[in-house]
Amino acid sequence: MVIGGYSFEYVCDIVPETDDNGNIVTLYPRELYVKKESLPLHKYGKGIFCKFKIPTSWKGKQGVYCLYSCGELVYVGECIDLHDRFNMGYGNISPRNCFKGGQETNCRINNLILNEVKQGKSVKLFFLETEKRIEVEKFLIEKLNPPWNLQSSKNSSNGSSKKQIDAMFTNTKVSSNTDTTFVRCGHYEKLSIYMKGVSSNSIKLTFKEIENVINRNLPPSAYKHRAWWANGGHSHSNYWLNAGWIVEDVVLGSYVVFSKK
Image 1 (cartoon, rainbow, N blue to C red):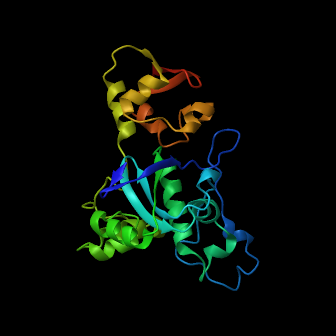
Image 2 (cartoon, rainbow, N blue to C red):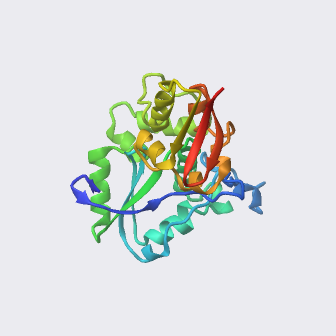
């Protein structure tokens, strides 16, 4: 992946931990902090949060990392150890970090990733190993203005990136003239459009056929858990439900049978 003129290596998809039913395990670590009554939360500390890990093979590697959601660059950061940055930082929110003086960025990025995945989006991590991590990070942020980087709002004439991020934590509405590609990805909309054009009352689609329709891989949970294909309870199910279809049967990793409602 060439990003801003630099060749980045794919690391992995960011996949939050799930329970036995395939539901993302959500966490409120602030409740575990022993001094929670005497210290205020920072603005990103309320949660909710999730847990995730990247492979241990990235231990000790310094450089610049990029997060992509729905094929769009959303965040650029630098680190002295990629493994620790994600497995001990973003992917494992400690109770103390939810409060004033804690690591606000860890909480903010964790929650943003959780929101993306809950919407059925695929969040991918890429990495460039380099000793010039500070310079490269600064260059990429200034050149590409990733929406999750608060520094990007300083480079933007209207500060819309910061408004969009803050809106997710304060429950305020984002103005209708903001860039909706940050808020919602349309790859499952492609499935909805496809299914609206099917005239029969039943259709059997292989996992590969579905991935060809949405033009990306299904998340690992779709291959592992029948609950991912439940008719309701997940945002991605709205795309086939709103098109007038329900999941009738699923063979994990093989095919799905849809029937008209």
